[in-house]
Image 1 (cartoon, helix red, strand yellow):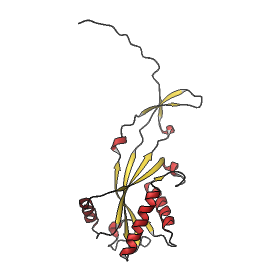
Image 2 (cartoon, one colour):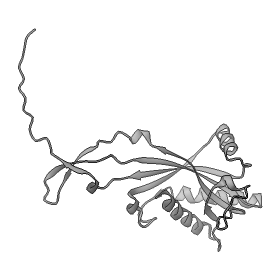
Image 3 (cartoon, one colour):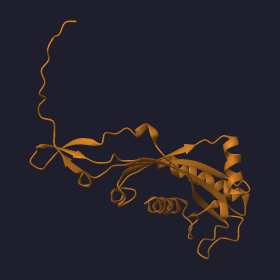
Image 4 (spheres, helix red, strand yellow):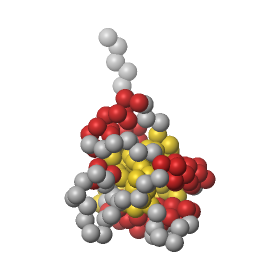
Length: 196
């Protein structure tokens, strides 16, 4: 699912840049100086989008597992299901261009695109709801010099003009996945006032 969403965003980004050949590819930037590139994955003189980290959004983790929903007759019923998961996918977009000025131009175009298109919905990416997603949010992530040093050191590459984005996937889960549970209709209890 992440690959299909990123492929759709790469296609929109290529439309924005407007070259006849695809300028932006989904690939592994760590392979830019390597001979491990496959035949169909030539990342030389391209803008490459790589996933560098996937995290669960911990602030949205405490959703209730049991929910009250209404059936077609308007009657309430209880449904138990695993709560949806919210992910943060960190993307590194690097301009692996032969001309440094062209690389800077492409990174500027990427920033411009995501500045004007920071929220993607079903109207932008048809079939988004088929992946269980309501919307996708992209925020510019300002990495410190230390983080950039560690990132490029881990990838074993030389620094190229790049930008990091945090893509937030807002999942919604379908009702059919859960099992029905009985609702609490009355509480039978007696309270007595006991003196100590």
